[in-house]
Length: 268
Ligand code: SF4
Image 1 (tube, rainbow, N blue to C red):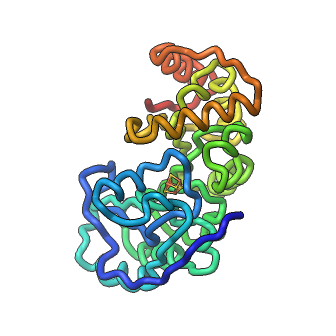
Image 2: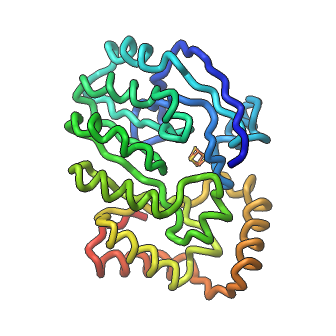
């Protein structure tokens, strides 16, 4: 496991209005993310904005240690119809959350309100907070699962949780009656657009009990292309795999067909 520089900070605001998401307000209890996925768009945005830390993304995290207190105060001014997204620019259940519990504190504060809440995560640590999740009337969890192939996962997001961990998270959430979907996002071009990977992905999702999948592309491809191609080459060298790649239309059609066969609702 690589080392992580942790800094505790106090934030003035935690709820941020956004027009760049399906929700109206986002909450990110951390700045930075220890998972450091190779295709993450957040460091690209930081670089564009002239913010520091883009080059070392994945190696540092700032903890908003007063996040629960700020949410308690700011929710007083939020309309009950406002849809809230947790984890648009960080994974709120990344490993240091085990120690700091700020995301759990934020959830606790939100649980007193009827607002619709969506959590975006790939971390099985969320299992710890199922007791709180069950308090919400309108909550859904989107679990990021860009691949169900551990060999692929180790190349493109080596510091993120295993596929098995995400499947376990899925099963535990569904068992607790929590609406849970998979985000096949980003869809890894040159890897996932093969008949083998599509069939495997949909089969594993169905076995985990998933009934809804969202498919999304890599954001900011022009900034990521060079690095992505080198990881793709590494993956192919490691596995000796010569893929039969599908065209985009064929890929989308096959994803839809495979999902339909097992009764999964697919949004591309
Ligand atoms: S878990 Fe999300 S926020 Fe964290 S590095 Fe990966 S894509 Fe970025």
